[in-house]
Image 1: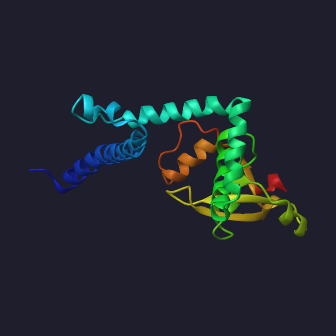
Image 2: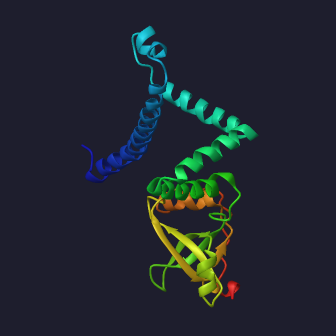
Image 3: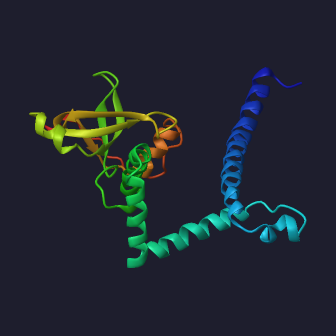
Length: 213
């Protein structure tokens, strides 16, 4: 007979194996299923259902990667850049589409191109009350905002847990934030895992608030 404590520990041990595995498989299945939608761009004769008699999962992943790769090759030359400018000019004439497209493009340019200053520093800020600290990412203060505020401010994005794509955007005094020696990737891991799955070596340096004053 197993003791109740032993049964509980075995169940927890089993959950620790199956929960991350099932979630990982679910996410992968979602990604593959989504990318398989790109197969609709292919002629019906090229689909495996027609010449193999069955659907082969993952074709969409390969096709999506190839589309992204050759798109990057295309826009790397002058002709491709002119095509992008023409396309963006068309989108700029559509009011709602223009707002959505350019907002998303600014975020993606900052995150992927490495040319912007947003999400390049990890900070500690007082949130949600003066006795608590939260991880935040430094972003940009609009010129119009900086011109109307008398103090030296920092724009910060405070992501929520476990979904870092949502959060809060604040302006805080520079003297009230602490810049820490942590990579953006490491900070995202802390946030997504709610501080459980900490990186093995994050190089965290925890200064005191007086260091910034």
